[in-house]
Length: 203
Image (tube, rainbow, N blue to C red; front, side, top):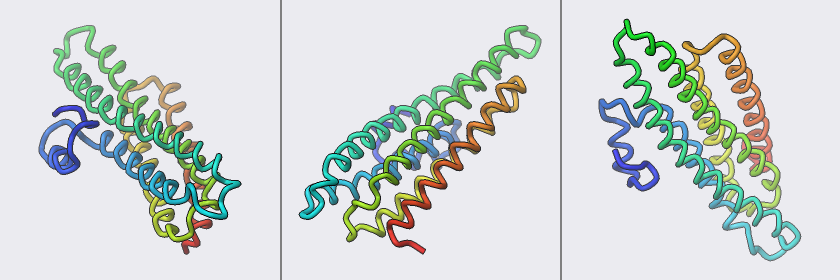
């Protein structure tokens, strides 16, 4: 399919639903994170320029800029994930008696794990950014802020599932390192999500 970054939502969903190798779960995880961040950006846009919030204006604008970059990064990673999995399938087609096969599969598996790990890191950083300014957001958008928190955590967990699905062929040290990173980033994202939910007055 063409670049996910330029694909209409309905077309992306149809491609995801189809019985085709890509896009798959990794791309979906990246898009979930991008959706969460876009929701957070919307809350910030309705918070910037509000009367009585002048002192928070610089922080809100800096956060909005950071989130726009994170959203763009996740869209890029969604495309990278689809490309990496296509490479993995090509490596899987190498004859089993070819000595290059196992090394190529390991290389591809490492990339297929690194991309969602990068996405998870991006989501965790975005969650920290949103948590840091959640108190200063427009109170009329508290439900939207709560949705942001829920989507951030869903996107992060989805990325972690994708990382772990691609670590079986890694060397044990690389696999343990990837799993440890996932656990730490999920914990951070969950803590930031709780902060956001608390500021949004969510149960």
